[in-house]
Length: 238
Length: 194
Image 1: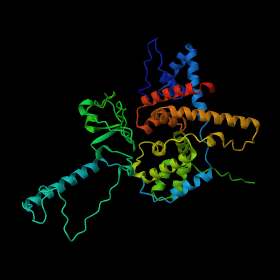
Image 2: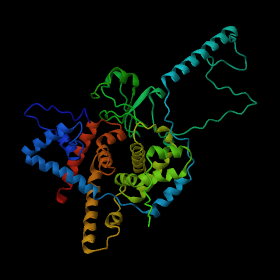
Image 3: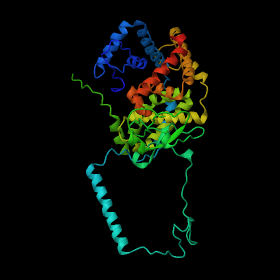
Image 4: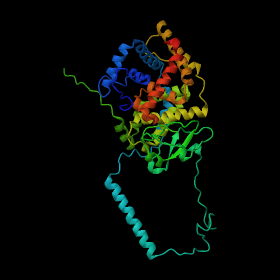
């Protein structure tokens, strides 16, 4: 709010944008606090422009009348089966608020280095045979999956796309970021990296996929996170 | 005679309830549900247009939220996080089922004015409210989904611009723009009511 609603306060010909007037009508520019100067300036401007002041009042009325028609509580009988379903839920472990300290990361990094060093020493002292057993082809020799006759093949559960809902995406878990809204409807339009300039991205939030803007008719595009690091400034998709 | 005044127990914060929930306290689950079920329902109702679908969406949303609590790390409020899950569940349900036409029975039968006797004035106000709700629902259905969702989160869930931006993962400038244009359109549709 602070950035978006900071307006030049000096010039005489200043006219607030209609979006700003709507924000004023919504009480987003309180008379006290960091937006106080802007609040005061808008009030002064509205005093000189009564016809627009009527519009602002209409904004308020639209919201007020809308809120007057909010859905009523469906009542205890309607909530009972919902609550019963929730009661039957097996709860997963609760949220973990603990974040790794710098010391923790250093410790983990040190541990990984030690493990890598130990592995290197082990391989050096016990080199892997260059030729594999005839029964077991090297992965590079064949992409076939070889299953010995006396073992049952392991069955991996497979979920379809419809059974998966992405609730959160973390930067360290993926090399790309979803732009747009899921589910994808219609054909998926992909752009070459050279066709996309990422000039603005919102910071990651809890379980919130960063959304930039829809790109023309593209339902969804995947952009490498590296692009985000290159130019994180405000702007548009082209 | 000495009278001991029992002060009301303090209302536990969301964080406190979540901590209790993490420890397996089922009562905390019910308190969180009771605290947010109505706002969740109102958002879902506006997005879906009828009571049955809205209740299903609230149930789906709460189930998803509670089974994925580990994904909530407290960087935003629980309310905004929950409303994102709920509104996603409502939109998914709407896409699966197709947003039904507004059930006229829901609209024509204003349920509450709890405690008020049924007077002629109340009945008249109820009918007017029902007509207005019907008109608003039609007008909402004509808005682009992004504008509709933004407006509903602001007007029904009474979220601030910043909170709406957090829920939708968009900038506050985009929230401002969407709200302005949504309201402009609603204003035109509701001209006869203003």
